[in-house]
Amino acid sequence: MNAFTTLGLSRELGEAVERLGYETPTPIQEQAIPLLLSGKCDFIGLAQTGTGKTAAFGLPLLDLISDEAPFIQGLILAPTRELCVQITGDLQNFMPEGSGLQIVAVYGGASLGQQIRQLKSGAHVVVATPGRLVDLLNRKALQLNRLGYLILDEADEMLNMGFKDDLDLIFEHTADQRRTWLFSATMQAGVRRIAKQYMEEPQEISVGERNSSNEHIEHRYAVVSEKDKYPALKRLLDFHPDIYALVFCRTKMDTQNVADQLIKDGYAAGALHGDMDQPQRDRMMNKFRNRAIRILVATDVAARGLDVNGISHVIHMNLPDEIAYYTHRSGRTGRAGQKGISIALVSNRDQSRIRQLEKLTHTNFRILTIPTGDEICQQQLMHLVSRVQEVTVSDEEMDTFLPEVEHALRNLSREDIIKRFAALEFNRFLDYYRDAPDLNAAPGKQRANDKVRPTDESGPQTAYQINLGIKDGMDKGGILRIICESGGIQRTAVGKIYLDRTFSTVMIAEEVAPQAAKKLSKAKYRGRPLKLTADAAPQPSSAPRSRPGKRQKAKW
Image (cartoon, rainbow, N blue to C red):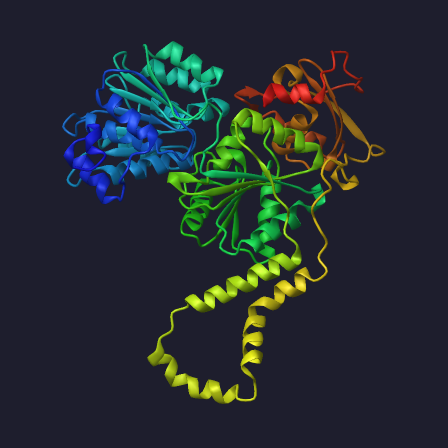
């Protein structure tokens, strides 16, 4: 009897899990599985990403439902297509041999007709994103009136992505007697509202402190100027020759630019962001999972729910605006008990946010020094030596060619041969990092190049009002990010920003203002439509001015 069957799982399911190599349940699995197997209670499980939540709810669900009942018995909601696909794959792997259970994944970006055909052919479990499921419910393509178990995975992320109304509609379509299992990394107010409105006396389990980070992740930060962030990223990649990394940027534009530059500089890299269609995203994810690319540059939205084993580093080109986003970002590494490193590249003005993160996540951030050119060259040389020591040599095949090789190299000494073979792979690092400057900014002192340079205000500009302000937890940086990312314009096209309590006024370069307004009118912030309207010349806000630190604190 293995450790999972002692939790109450059936022998067949325990054997299936054992074949997958699972030996010891994680804390959330150990506490959740016995409770959920009873099938008699609603449940709230709070645990960070990478702690085994899929198995914590997936294994009991598979044990509780029957392949002889020809209707949907289990529904799992996930915030993203990637997580939806990953959960479906995990459940299929968990199933014992000979099981007749049918699991269907439904999500946006894939053929709706094909998903409807799969549902009509019979489904016992549906794994869905909220938006696509609502579409199918409106088309009456599936019925949930006999649903036994409704599971919300990463509930906080679904609310952050604006799915509140969709979740309310889905709950209305489900059977009253269903059991609801809710899993989340954080217990924000919206998650608590769902629990209060739709769950009956739920059993609650919390693994680790709320908002705390995975104990297997080492958190570091490096202080560099804005202009040096890309060179600093390159140095981190070069200093870790075997790196398998996820790099986060704030905007889709920045994500694509960083990925393009890495590819141009010879790195096996790719981008993942919202402007890519589903086939493109799938191809990129397959390349990353198969390690055809070892560096994936992504936005927060695109990488939500991304579950890839063995990621060694998460690198933040910018700190996110909300603490939950940092927790989810860094949680992509250090999964399943493995060690991971999360590195934030910050300018001097952002160091206070590191202190806030330390306080709110109960985590110690250690300062990291960006390596010098000499340190990188030394590291790369020792990596080359290690590869030479570990390479497999076929003596019989090599012996055929060795006489000619020895003859060609007869005039070189042993030391010369070693130097020349090392130089074949090593010269490019020596050339690139020769006389390389120190990229580390002096702590506590903002360098001139750290300043964000707005558009030249001597050029023509248009004033716009956007329906976000101080009461929404906004600061000028948050408004700038939303205008640039959702409006598809460069930061240099944005001039002065005036904050008021319920709105903000933004100066935008005249030549790009119409296109930005058009794109923003189709965008949402936390499920709320954005409105950008032309305004007269802005005046400084008459609302009480909160200090930047206080406004930031409302979000962090």
